[in-house]
Image 1 (cartoon, rainbow, N blue to C red):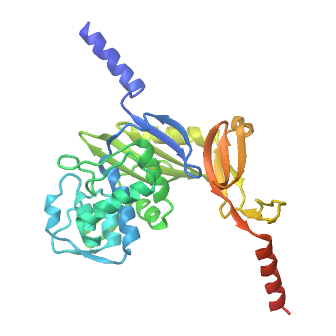
Image 2 (spheres, rainbow, N blue to C red):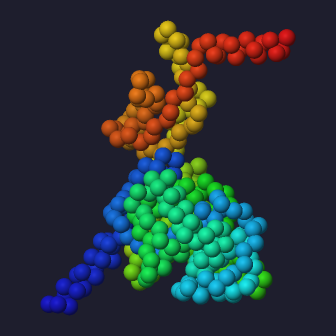
Image 3 (tube, rainbow, N blue to C red):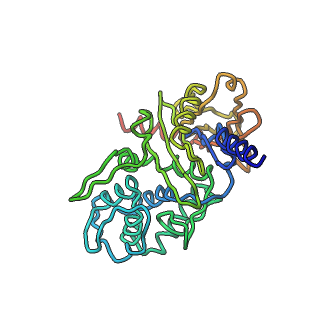
Length: 337
């Protein structure tokens, strides 16, 4: 009887991993189009290095030379095996960090860019700015014995959405291998070669976290972000989810900064406009559920995009007063006389 129960439980586990946290996010709108336990706080292992890379890229340059110091002796697990006293460019170290997942590279980067404690503070400040409100970083590598990095599938999708706006980040994470001196580092993200639409990704694993994977793919102008935490079959899962949702959704320009403008005929004759385009993935069935609301009052001047009754996006409205616009036109005419 016990064997039968055990077999049944194992069957259920492989049929649907009840422990996994999963998010599929539209990179344009931040809209979550599929989720499972997306706000459950969990250890995120080496996917922490996505944030490490971003802090390094935004606070230094790829040609900066960094000398390896004795801090590397605190690292263990996945390593690049760089040695104390050697000197590398930040590009070298980031490649070792994101391809080989070197914990020694993580410590070298954190100590080489700024004081270590400040680097960790910058990681957490950036997380806050990205609205990753359920995330705490205590180290730059993701090892979770003495210090721990905690996040959620949703928060890590937000981080990857931000990271892929940085072309250097994409270029580094898309490499299948990197050679510097006598070192050759290979990318552990196998989906790069198995799925042609993948543009970036980072895997992570510890015994306590289980398998963690954050990736991004782009097809026909559509970009999706997928996070899975504690999902052993990570590569197959991500590929299946990409294929499924790329087929269901199309990309639409909801707000066009070049055409979205209007004038309010009042005593001020104010002219309103927006500064950004807004795109969104929608299925055919959802198109009629899209609503756009314009708010003009003392508290806010903005455009709100709703899907059914859920607020998806807010875009600030800017004002050109009639008198100012008229004076600007007159100045231009005088200039060309």
